Length: 225
Image 1 (tube, helix red, strand yellow):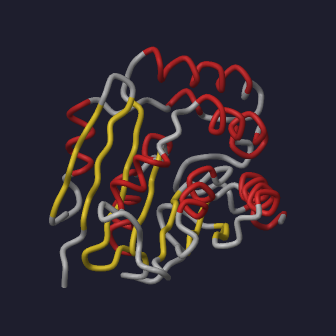
Image 2 (cartoon, one colour):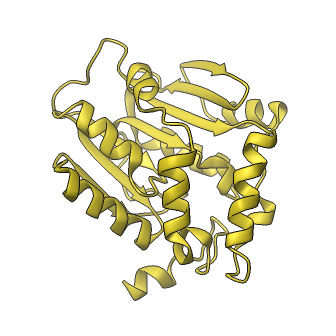
């Protein structure tokens, strides 16, 4: 475990002393109780026909405490759900919660969103929720998502929009992270132009966008072979 924590510093620009690691309980609480739960929205977007084919693989990148990984696995027992995160403590929480809830068709792996530990074309669906604003190189993360998607596979992306509803939880996390070495001060929601430019970095065969006052969503599909 110590080795994994040492590796926590890297291209994502989140240091070992990050809030997500040193104040893991706070981020888990915010993710579970303060952020919007989009589980049903994600399921409808990824599987518009109602359910994934048995054995389909869904990857939740930057899964944190595993909220969506567990939720989607519970909704679809035939799904193989994989959560990936750089924080060993978040992964431990995710595994403990899945065990407690009796969700057996999910697992949680240590990995970097900028270099996913997955083979190309190995995922039927990918989720990236509240992840891209955290990364120094979000375009690289999107390229990794596109790489691991199989032809015809879909990804669901959710990001907060700029506004008080985004700044308030960030401010709370900055206060709690004071003295921990976290670099939360650099985190900002993408503006409209930045969001569109980011989405355009990948050659989606189809891209659907929706938004409301607080969040923006995109569903991208990789071109069929």
